[in-house]
Length: 231
Image 1: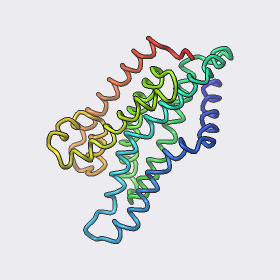
Image 2: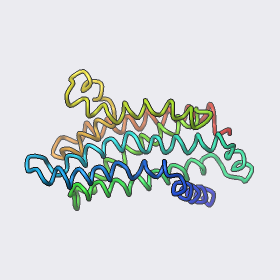
Image 3: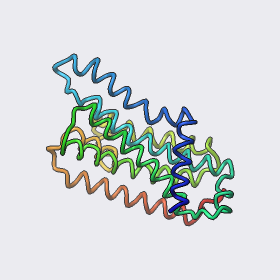
Image 4: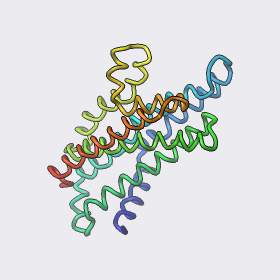
């Protein structure tokens, strides 16, 4: 566990050195806050939480995926993993450190989104919990892509179209029935539905999200068993 903690601290330090990575966690909450204050609250016909739920769903499909993706791909490209293995860091400790950091930051951002949207008490817990579940799925997918990629450029080439589908399909689904049918199996669509209306039946959306997590966990295990963390 000491090694996992060291990896966690390393990722914390690297994130604050890498402005592009840091921007991924800041950009969408800032946009949600600005549009909420300047547009939603100034117009009585627009719900105060409209932009928050919209950008929160995009955040789930985009940021944890690209974060986990780029972190692992960067370490593979720089051959950092070889040095970590030589230092006695086990693969599960590395993945635990990276995944733990990504989910911790996503948890903080999820709470920030909720506060911007005016959620409080049990609603804030539900809101943040749903986002964290979605972030878990994205982190698993991003980790799998990172392991498969030889370098950051390759990881970005694969990850970008994937996160665009996950992040923007729920928005398109509001206006297109074909897109809505396709989106119904995506965890990001179910996250979008839940955070927009907690009064809806939650059993089916939660089940779809959990199935997505199970499938992506199996995909990650398959990729990991095949490729491992060879740098």
